[in-house]
Length: 426
Image 1 (cartoon, one colour):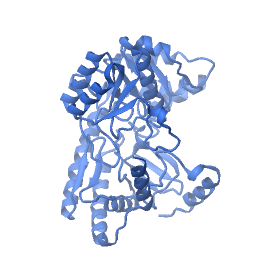
Image 2 (cartoon, helix red, strand yellow; image 1 turned 90 degrees about the vertical axis):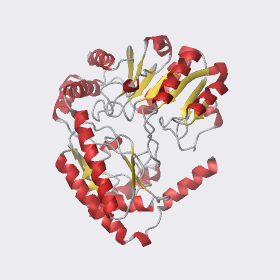
Image 3 (tube, rainbow, N blue to C red; image 1 turned 120 degrees about the horizontal axis):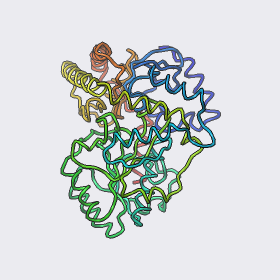
Image 4 (cartoon, one colour; image 1 turned 135 degrees about the vertical axis):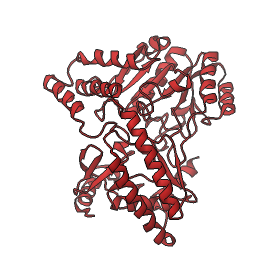
């Protein structure tokens, strides 16, 4: 595939942007053939700056729930834009959106809007501390809750004081959680949990109901607040809270990515028991109350309530998982497929340095399929059975191509360097 425009953009970016790109959308940890810049999205597809088209299993790292440029969602956004977006005060759509969300999320008695997942999780932490008057916050080892100093996975620029009262436990491990709560004593403000374990570079884990219920019971016993971080999984697993099916309601939940189908907005939702704490913190941003994303969210939430978007994604995810397993076996590979089928993690057994996984996704990319070698992926409602059939056909060819050059594969050098850096900091 031609990469001339992408390469020229990278060279220009290096002069004016540190490393040419930063954050989770940097391709420095992806195979060399992966494009950095994209010019267009439509439905389930994206086009890179050179015009190459891909079936996109990253969905913008989660925001595209219904598909890019969804006509009804974008029409609602345009209609609001004609009236105004970022004004001196919020638009009436703020109240309508808040009422809609409170009506859809069982534990929510109120919501506060912001822009990014990090905003929402940080607001959740601050609210819990303000409500309880305590300091210690428990997070699962390896869990990602954003890019602020208290939670970023990359230690550069972080000092010990930023995390002085952040402590860890092992996800799904009841004994580990109980020990962490005991160690916090009477200074426990909150327990953070993800709807399921979706850490990078490793298999995903669905929540053990015993673990989820214990987290709720420990918070009830200590007066701490249970926070479920729905930023990545919210509205992809359920039409309300992801832990509703477990019979567990959090006190606070952080949401983002997809509830406006790619328009920039996130939120903190909370129970009545946390209203006073939420009202006492100072949380704001110049663009947090922009009206256009709120209008897009209202329409997205209508579609969430009224269509089979979720069931459709699960059906396609089931077909993808079964088809990939069959094709991998046929070519002598064993896949480790984990997580919900609509948010799949796909790794290879006996691939500790990811050289097989990297080669496979690179072969897929050459065939018009954008998958990721170490991050969980996403299906969107715009995907079709035909798209899944096309992906499986490409995967079969990719398995064959990797098998043919298996003895020549090498690990990604930047990934090796980063692993060594993180090990040194640990």
